[in-house]
Amino acid sequence: MGALIVIFTGALVVLFAGLFAKRSILQGIGLVTALGGLVLSLVALNSEVFDLRHMLIFDHYALAFTALMCLATFLVFLASGYGFRQLGETLGDNYGLILFSLCGGICMVSFQNMVMLFLGIEILSIPLYVLAGSRRNDLGSNEASLKYFLMGAFATGILLMGMALLYGATGTFDVVAMGEKLTSGGLSGYGYIGFMLLTIGLCFKISAAPFHFWSPDVYQGSPTIITAFMASVVKIAGFGALVRIFSISFVGVAGEWMTMLGAIACLTMTVGNFGALMQSNFKRLLAYSSISHAGYLLLGVVSLQYNSVSSVFYYLTAYSIATIVAFTIFMLISEQKASENISVFNGLAKRKPLLAFAMTVALLSMAGIPPLAGFFGKYFLFTKALEANPVMVIVAVINSAISIAYYFKPITAMYFTKEEDVDNEVLLPGLIKTSIVLSLCLLVIMVIFPGWLQGLVG
Image (tube, rainbow, N blue to C red):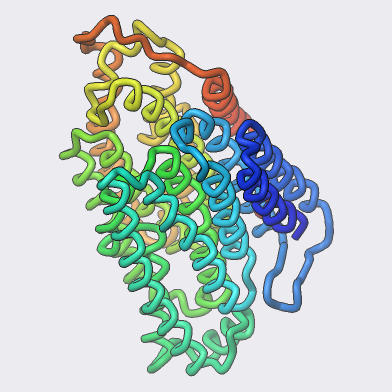
């Protein structure tokens, strides 16, 4: 609860600081706010569970996911000084909207009542519709904002209809009481239709196929720093909400939906990987990569009966940190070279070996190459999924092998392709260097202490 209050207060402070043109302190306020939320969440892990009138509950699960989102936001804010350097009077608004969106994410992973799930999704999404179009003179940014808004509004309608039908079938919005009634009575009639609609709405938020069509266009059109936030914090919040409601309300009737969700997982990872293979635009490549990772993470949802929550959390941590590193480095290089093609990485290893090394580690981790954190994330997930359905794991392993092909495209460009314009030197701001080095250290710590990280979710 303390983290939510601190982040909301920080959002208000940064808005007023921007109003009074205190541009120089806005990034600092954002960093302190995100760091404060992270520290308070970790400290609260040793406290008793805080239940806010059965609407929000801050247990180990909620606090761990809150800490992860605050960490991801902190890493994004370290790079935001460069990412927002061209903004004028709207700079404070952008920082404030990111923090308000983070508040929505916290509500999504802490809800105990379906009403709070809906409010959390809207609090998370509405600021992002604005942030996606924050470059008002860029047609691509405007298009991304409009597509995200229209698709988001459509998905919200489906989600609300699902909630209404589930209420009609169970007589409650409380997820614990709903789980008890569904376990005793099963999914049937309105309850089954409501479950399907709710799943569709949440699948949109995590960009699972076939509800992923918005993702590549929105990722490409949005400012890169906002795309990094979407690919990390929004993904964490979406899966945090999905795992929470499935593990509490629907796990008792898992036999009725495991096959369906397993099929969605296989379709998602296949669509994501084959889509990424055909991309030359790096942001679209990472968008399809994000879709494929949603498919892998859905394996953890399918195997919730086998205690896969900690594996999902570990995987999300490894994926989010690696994704932020990739987007941060790409933002730095692409904006200095005025291109989003993979060719911007040509010859990077000779000019900026730190950036090339960090990008290589991030991409190989997402590909699941040992001994990196992404490999252990996939190992933990696949081990749990193997108990639920071995066929899904076979499909996942094949898709992981396919993904290596497109993750090696930028690596090949960095180490084995000569740069045409050798006079174009890439500048490396101090805070971005700090973000990259800190992220690499976190990935190393994850490999050394995987058990400690998994233990955070209780």
